[in-house]
Each structure stands twice: as C-alpha cells, then as structure tokens.
Image (cartoon, rainbow, N blue to C red; front, side):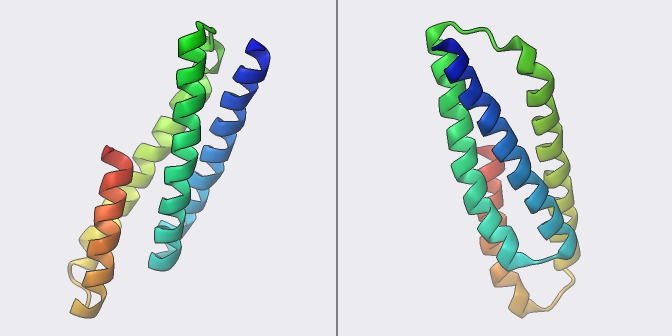
Length: 115
C-alpha cells in the first residue's frame, strides 16, 4: 500500500514538472492566455501533489529518496517566478490595454506562487 501511495506522489511530481515546463514556455513566449490556462492547471497539479505528500506524511511513509525531485520542482518554480517577474516588469512599459490582462494574470500568479 505504501508503494502505491508513493507512486501517487511520483506521478504528481512528474505531472507538476510538466505543467511547470509548459508555464516556462508560455512565459518565454509572452503568451498571456496560455500563462493563465497553465496557472489553472498548476493549481490542480499542486493540489494533487500536496494531497499525495500529506497522505504519505500521515501514514508515516518515508519519501526522502524523492527529495532530489522535490528540490528540482522547487527550483523550476522559482525560475518561473523570476521569468514571470521579468515579464511583468517589461509589461509596465507596454500599452495600457494589455495591463488589465496582465494585472489579472499577476494576481493569479501571485496566488499560485504565494498560496
């Protein structure tokens, strides 16, 4: 049973990693619509990841062997945060029509990254 629960965490990590990769590509392409869509997906995968980790914690299952993968995810998320911050800084000098979309996106991203 512990192995099945651990597999859920591994799958959640891989899924979240894929979503973070898509987010990185969308940020680099400055594709606001895709960034918003990926942010929604990221909320879902982060929820799966959190639930899988909590289940293992509650059952006392050791998953320290996955720490390297968890650190990789955290670093990727930090890198995406920086990329998004850079995009936001660039957008301040863009046209006012785009600002409302970026402000909405900024709020969603802030929520996703800061909880």
